Image (cartoon, rainbow, N blue to C red; front, side, top):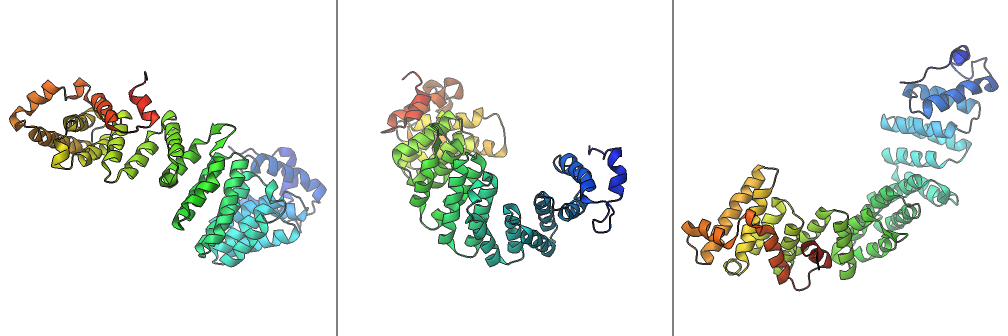
Length: 390
């Protein structure tokens, strides 16, 4: 609930409608201005309608906080679609003194009005100023990212690389993970689009760890966006970090994306899906791809793979139409595998029982360990996952 103006300031406040017409001088007005700034503005309880009044008095009294309030009002005007008013206000205040926040806001207003060239000029002026490095990280990075976005929109893709790189460096230097990951996302998208994935990796690699500790969010983005370009040892370290952090989705997405039609990579992805207890919609399609041909259905391990797929669908706690479909498909697949192993359809149940192919027989773990043994060079994290004693 907003705090009420103290009664001792009520009479004075009532005389402060318009600065130019008020009999209240700045020395006396200061108490009211200070109260509104401290008790309403800084507590986020100041009404939007009171912003112009407070700004008018601050400008009238040359209060240095007028730029902060003016920036907030300009941002509100932009949000309300009153772009010309926002531009005029920011320009008027900047004519009084330089202010980084207002310069940034003016650039946004100009861009929203379609004056991208002027907006880029304002942002360049901001980021190239000697005092730019002294700004808080969130302000600096946002300005750099907005400059890069405007340059990209104008088709100046190569010119956008510099502010993107600087945004990454600024966020890393200040150890701000949110801004670092946002900057990394934009950098990766930009450079991959230009065929410069290696350059993106070169820029981001020095920032993957800080003080000997991994930046997991940045590692995640590098794996997702640049995984195909990582050295094997770097890729495996990233995957191991995700496993330790419990982020199995990133690991599985990477393995599934890489699998394609390569049987060895498919086997690795399927084994990881079993080991990490991935849901049916991840595991079952991999099993189907592994058993797509008559040759693979006749293979020694085909019954375990097919049975594990059925067991995964059966054991999934969250039941859905998708889960039911994968269960049906898995059963059909198991029957087909049995046929390829000389088992008539009527004998499949007895065969599955004898071979220990049901969920209660631990078929998921058995299939995972069997598949692990068929992988030429399994990653260490997968070995540890399935064979914790080794």
